Structures are given as C-alpha cells and as structure tokens.
Length: 150
Length: 150
DNA sequence: TATTGTTATACTCTATAACTATA
DNA sequence: TATAGTTATAGAGTATAACAATA
Image (cartoon, rainbow over all chains, first blue to last red; front, side, top):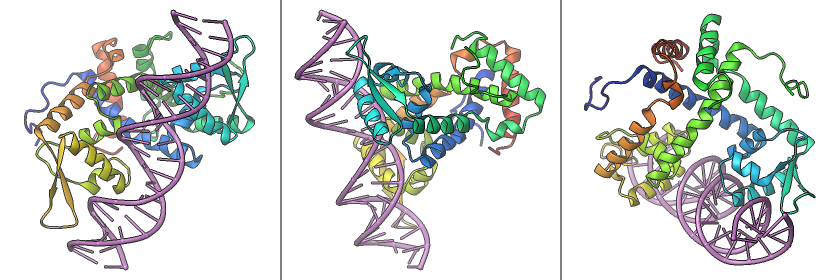
C-alpha cells in the first residue's frame, strides 16, 4: 500500500514538511476563493486590491510588477475595478506617461476586508500549543531570513 | 513608519507564523507557474494532472470535485488535455452516464514531472538546520493532525 | 426524480503584438 | 531609443442554465 510502483524513494525531512505545507495550502486556497466570492470579485482582483495601500498612489506598471503580469493585463483589471468604484486613475504630472491608481473609500474598505480575513491564521494553527506556535513562527523566521531575504 | 494608520493591532503568534507562510507561498507560486510554463500547460491543467494516478481511471465528476469546480468546466479541461495526448476518455460500462479519464504514457510522464518538481522543498528550507527541519515537520504534523484531519 | 456529462453563453484572466504619447 | 499605458486579438479558465442519456 505504501510502496506502490516505487514512486517515492527517500523523502528528506524538509520535503516532508513541504508536503504537509502543500496540504495546508490546498485547504486555505478555498478560504481565499471564498473571501473573493463574498466580495463578488475575481481572485486576481482581490490580489490587486491586497497589493495596494490606502492613500498611496501606485503606478500601473508597478502594480503589474507586483502581480507578475504584463502591463496590458493591468489595463483591463483596473478598468473593471474602476467600474466597480474600488479604484480610480489619476494622471501623474512628473512623468506624463504614468498613470497612478488610488483606492477609493469603497476600495479601502474592500481591501481591509480581504486583508483582515486573509491575515487570520488557519484553523489548523489553533490546534497547536502556544509553545508549538512560537516554534513554528521562529523556524519560519529563520527560514525566510530574520531580516527580509525571501 | 511602522504604526502607519493604526492598521495592525495585536497579532497573535499564530498570525505571525501565518504571515510568514503567506510570504513563502507567494514566492513558491512562481515555481508552480514556472513548471507549468515549461510544460506549456495552464496551471489548472497541471493541477488536474497532479490529481490523477497512473493506471487509475477517474470519473470526470470526481476530478471536478477534487478541483472544486463545476462538471462543465472539466469537459473543456479534458478536451484540451486529450488534444494534447495527455489523457484519454474511456466509457464506464457499469454506469453508462460516467466517463473515465486515464493518463496516457505521455500524461504519466508529464504528471511525474509536475509532481517531482513540486514535491521538492523550497530553497528557504535548506537554510534550516536539521533540527529546525524536524521541528517544522513535527509541528505541521501536529497542526494537520497526525492522522489526516485537515 | 436525480445524476453525469455536454453544450451554449457570458465574463474574466493572461500573453503577444502593434500603437501612442511621452521621456 | 526606451518606457507606460492602451488596444486588438486569441486562448484558457470558470460559473450558470438548459439539455440528453442514464440510473
């Protein structure tokens, strides 16, 4: 039952941890989708909102870069967010090629919804003792680099 | 610079761990996309392949369930995988409403590619000591339930 | 009656290429 | 020349509703 076709050889400890993490993320992805659906937004749209800061105009090409997609993609994305009243375009005087995007009050609210809902730890974590939670956090800090390296 | 608008109040230890995890997954998502792109497949298509087992025919509605999407979605998905020679449809005699999907040899190979490439732990984990790796794995096991509960 | 898979429809995402207006 | 954003185009994902075949 375990050694089916000879599929899995030796799995390192790190690989085992990664497998567990993938399983967790599969579950959590449903939460993402649920939040987006409740706001009647496409997942990509919630992603865009999550990238933005209130009162912080963002050049469209910068949004494209954060989303790892083409500029042309952002045009339509912003069109639809703007039609929904969540963001608005604003010309940027110092470089007239650039257009800035800003969150509207409605957009700020939606963005807060997304962030607060997604920032809550998964249910699976509440199962852990406080010591385990600290251990998990500290190990992840070390993995990602205490400073900022990703 | 840290307390901008009063955005973040108190963040629990579990929430901190979750935030780190989200940061990790943002990076790893690029790996997913890269693997799919290298195989010239859409991410959803690689997901479908990953769900299937070699020599294990799968009803289409079951595939839809694993992917958390509608049956009608799977029709087109399988159409395209079949056109690529990665899967094939097979009638199921015992219930003639059902169609089974099976991986072709080419599909098995692609599925192996996807799985082996995605099963490797992220680079961030190699930065950890063996003790940390074990700790991470064991905590995650406890979080997800040693048995199977998610 | 309920389920499986398909079709039709509509909307969104996504990339590429060509275009403009700037720089 | 290079960059920012748009447009046009094409292909894929996704859901809903309606449908035929089967249970």
